[in-house]
Amino acid sequence: MTDLQTRLEAAQRIARDAASVAMAHFRQPLDVTAKSDDSPVTIADQATERAIRSALGTAFPGETIFGEEFGQSGSHEDMWIVDPIDGTRSFITGLPLFGMLLGYVSGDGPQVGVINMPALNELYAGARGLGATLNGQRVSVSGCTSLSEARLFLNEADKMAVETPDIFARLVTAGGLRRLGADCYPHALVASGHADAVVDYGLQPYDYLPVAAVVEAAGGVMTDWQGNTLTLQSDGRTLTAATPDLHAELLELVHT
Image (cartoon, rainbow, N blue to C red):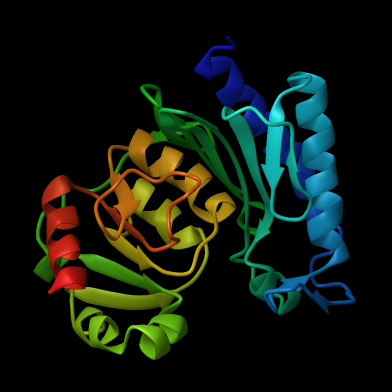
């Protein structure tokens, strides 16, 4: 069994190397097509995932990989999770807040995670029991315990407003400071102590599992809306919080 330190170091190296593939297409003319769920995909998404898969295959031959663009190769429950461009809508509109997610999960949950922000030159990484870093420097969550004082991000707020209007109405007046956001970066800001909480909605496993590993390594809490550990089977609604007390308030808010 390869140790987590080895996996963490490899994941950071692979994500850094793959950043050049994505950045070669950023703010360049792109053909955009729609997938079956109407989400956009570009050659940049596909080329970046191919680069990551190739590097993983070299570093960890035969291990299972589950990616957004090309699905699952292998059948083992311990697997690498890949989202080559988390925030394709940001990418195709020139917004530098798209990320690259790479993680390793086992039957015991998220183990290793990388949130790479290529256009910002920020790479967040963490592993269970090993702490979290930003560009190699240790980071940690804030000590915020009260929702009334929290810097709160609402991700995918347009979806929540339509599909869960009562919950959205409560969330949009919660917190000491609120921002509407999307994708992985708000979670990275919680991991590094700049924000305190994120309520997210409509995610896929490759969106939340690598992120959860980073948040938890930084000392935070990330679960589904029922308070359960995130798995491949989670329903895509997540709560990220700096502290257990803050997380408990968020849980209560979405269930009131």
